[in-house]
Amino acid sequence: MNLGDASSRTTATDGRPRDPVAEVIARLEVSARKGERWLTGYAKSKLRQDPIYRTVLPLIPPRMKVLDLGCGVGLLGLLLDARGLENEIHGIEWDAPKTRFAQRLTEQIPSIQLVCGDLWEESWPQCSMVVLLDVLHYFPPDQQRRLLFRIGSHLPEGGRLLLRVMDARSGGVAMLTRLCEWGAVKFGWNQAPGVHWRPLAAIRGDLLEAGFSILPSPGKADHGLGNCLLVCGKPRSADPLPARSPSGLRRSSRSS
Image 1 (cartoon, one colour):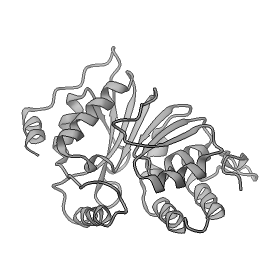
Image 2 (cartoon, helix red, strand yellow; image 1 turned 30 degrees about the vertical axis):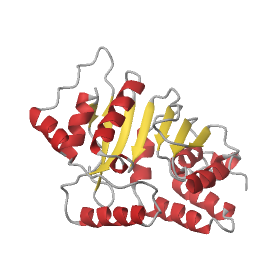
Image 3 (cartoon, rainbow, N blue to C red; image 1 turned 135 degrees about the horizontal axis):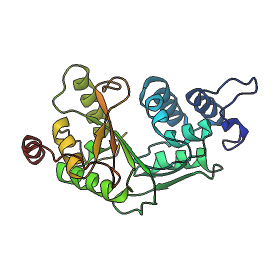
Image 4 (cartoon, rainbow, N blue to C red; image 1 turned 135 degrees about the vertical axis):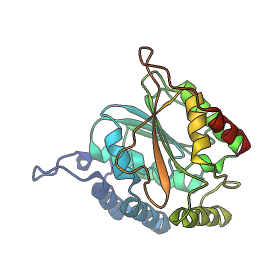
């Protein structure tokens, strides 16, 4: 099956709308190769169990250019292609095996460009949306702040950031999520020197200081095992400027 063929259209042969998630799972099953079955299984499990993809797809307008930082195995790009609304996506991923897997899956889809490299060193193409899902916590607090400010500087007026983070102060199932993430890093599944959870208030404060407005999130703010999706916008010149973060948030950011 050619992953770039007409199967990526949004309408099935019977005229009913396609489900991009089901479409990509079908592509993964057909394209599975020996030696990649673990990554294939991980990708299918992620699509089936993590609600984030069904949540973010409606937030990405047709034809919008997207920068996916920490794109993993390239699922967002595959979903946008399966949706068929003419999006272009550029992904950067640090993990070489995941990048090779993603590049093979997308090599015949011109609208998807994936590179293996350090997001601090790779060039960022022009875009109207940046997606940063479950990546921020791999950086120490000062680098987290720098990254949010860089994204704020990179996006044009009216641009959007979709950011999923974990609140360091959340309990319950979130504690299990943090434990699993720590284990994934320790045993090498997620390649990072460590994990650095921060209070959600501190992250919100950094976003406001970086020039973002924090917009209402769709449905519940909590999406999957304690994670929180933040929808952030860069105001246009005619829009009111975002309020400066309260001093309490700034103190929380520095002390985290």
